[in-house]
Image 1 (tube, protein in one colour):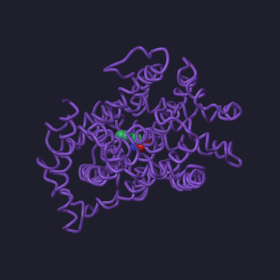
Image 2 (cartoon, rainbow, N blue to C red):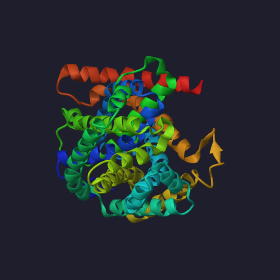
Image 3 (cartoon, rainbow, N blue to C red):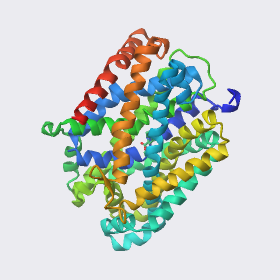
Amino acid sequence: MSENSRGSWNSKLGMVIASAASAIGLGNLWRFPYLTAKDGGGAFLLAYLFITIVVGTVMVITEVALGFKTRKNPVGAFGWIHPKCKFVGVLNVIACMTILPFYNVVGGWILAYLVKIHTFNQVSDYKVEFTNLITADYEPLVYFGIFMVFSAIIVFRGIQKGIERFCKILLPLLLFLLILMMCRSLTLNKALDGVKFFFIPDFSKFDVRLCLDAMGQVFFSTSVGSGVYITYSSYLKTTEEKGIGKIILPVVIADTVVSLLTGLTIFPAVFAFGVEMTSGTGLVFITFPQIFETMYLGTIFCYVFFLIFFLAAITSAISLMEVPISFLIDNLKLSRKKAVVVYSIYCLIFGTICSLSFGRLGGFTIGGKIFFDQLDFLSSNILLPLGGFLGSIFVGWILGPEKLHVFVNQKQQKMYEFCVKWVIPMATLILFIDCIK
Ligand code: TRP
């Protein structure tokens, strides 16, 4: 494929917005609260924030710089460092392929809520409703299929202009609504207990499992270790390389702020309503509607919230489609149309198994986990950090991070180089070794 036919963003801002749209998604609104609940609140938050600063941000900057320099998809970009490094790009593509099937299933649940929430309001027992929904045979499959077709159509049509325009409205709206929800939640009875749970770390909770979960969440939430930023920044028009690292910092900040706002909305409500912390993947689907029910015009807010939730999910799903598709187009020389069809069939098969793993296929477990949980664990806790580990080793030690002029300020550049060479490889490696033990 020639450089020109690869397409480009209208502006740097467009690329930043599309990246933020990729980063902000189910990871913030669904995965972050349920992991925080599972791993003991404040302790998890502390680990998450620390890893975001030293690993997440540095990885995002590295991927952006790599894509910008090479103007290639992840396989091409790593192949540019050294032909033998190509497999890291392939690993990036596989990571996206592991995430998207279960991501689409959750997207389907959101869609189901949008269609059915008015019937839930009369019943009020969201836990029962949610469980009935996800364990059913056909219903979740239909919604999952519709969600998948939506994202496939957008990717098929070419996403750049759509996303750029769409997200300029979407992101501020999302923030506004979340702040509103947070205010409501913080004024509930016993809200303070939730805030304390979220912010005050219980140091006895720190263990390897918690750190591994936090690292997986940082990779998942900021979309690193999967080549999204390499792909997106390869579409940048600008040729000014110096200081490229800085343009992407707002993405990490926005992503972290959305997670914090979600936590400050969910946990006060969890304590106020006595929802079980262990409700896992269902936490947001059960707690949020409960808050809305207590609000004036609650049903309308509920609809708007799940609509935003849906849009946030779809813009991320698009990025998870775009990486393997750009690989199929560039490396296997498929047309965009064929690539979308092939990848969609793949997602349909694996997504169906994921969805059924809550019901009919519940007995089919791998390593004690149902298929859905296994894909989630495999992608976030293994494949993405592994992509980060190998990526930082190859950029840090084979290419040399000084070749990527990410910061103009010398001190910042030196700190960046130190993190790529030492901090990321060490942090990911230590956790892996402990995980395998
Ligand atoms: N970051 C997104 C979220 O928080 C999910 C996502 C989109 C993603 N693209 C990715 C995760 C690539 C890992 C890799 O929902």
